[in-house]
Every structure is written in C-alpha cells, then in structure tokens.
Image (cartoon, rainbow, N blue to C red; front, side, top):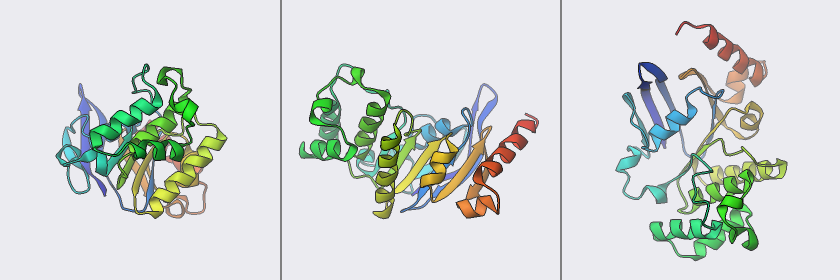
Length: 237
C-alpha cells in the first residue's frame, strides 16, 4: 500500500533523508518513530507529492501520489492540523472537502460524528479551536473519502487522554477494515500502544524496523530506541 524505496532528500548539501526504505501493508498500523528533526515529516511530504526526492521513489497503491486519479478518495492525509482557514467553521471545511471529492453532504455529518465534534463545535470558526479540536477536524478531513491508506503526522499532539484513547480505537478499527495506516510520532509510548510494526528513524536514516517483539528482543522498546539514536548521534556526519 505504501512503499519507500531508497529515498534520499538533500537540502543545500545536507541529507534530510538518507536511503530510506520500508513498506506499509494493508490492515497494518505502522508507527514511524523518531525524534524531532529525524526526517519523518520530510518523508511524508515526499509520499504525498508535496516535495520530490533527490533520488529513490515513494509510492502509494503502487503509484506516485501525484499519479493517482482521485487521490482524495484513495489516500487520507493529515500533515498539519493548523492548515485550515481560520475564518471558516469546521463544518464548512468538511463541506468544501466533500464537494471537491464529489461526496454527498450527508458524509459531513457522518465524519463529524466519527471524530466527536458536536453540532455547536462544528459551527464555530476553526481559528477558535483548540489544538485537539483541530486534530479531530484534520483527521475527519482525511477520512472523508473512505481512504484505503491513511497518513498521519503527529496526530496525537494536543489530544487529551480521552482523545488519545479515541484515536487508538479509530485507527485499530480502520486497520481491521483493511486500511494501511502510517502514523508518525516522536512519542514512543503512544506509538507502542497502537502500532503493529515500527520503523525507527534518526538523522534521516532508518535505524531499525519490525514488530515490537522483533525490536525489543528482551528489552523495552525505549531501551532499543535510545541505544539506536545514541549511536546515530555519535556517527560522523
């Protein structure tokens, strides 16, 4: 469903991504784990066609995102919860999205219910939303088209404990329905709670990937992650 094949991205001679390869199969939640600045957001921007790799390829459903006929109906993405017009209401944001995708307006009410935004909240301007509400709206926008692939960059930011539990259950339900989920985070505990497999990245390079059991090998995931990132910090540039 998602494949990175030897992706490298260079900015002004510095490598933001260095030979990154991994896959996300259907029905699986893949945690993309790394500290801030590790290259997670760059990888997701390349995957969704917002920037080009210097070398290598990133594909969704077997093709580059920009080559999909109707990407909004096949791939849902949340890369920045703040990227909504602050003067529009939450309902207006979703209604415009539904219109662009050729979906009935009834889908807006379904999504609002799915993400837990009340009628009163949906009529408020997005500029007055808390970060947690913007995250829920962004996830709702990503889910409008019943996507087969879901790409989320730090979706737990701003969510309270109840919201985090809601998000975990939502992602598990989507995976059970066959959706491929790529979830990036720098919060190890959150990824550990929901992911079926994990890709660890540091300084733009994949440090390790596998299931929790495969990566732990008798140690906690935190120990594994800290050791790998410490090795990366000591590596020459």
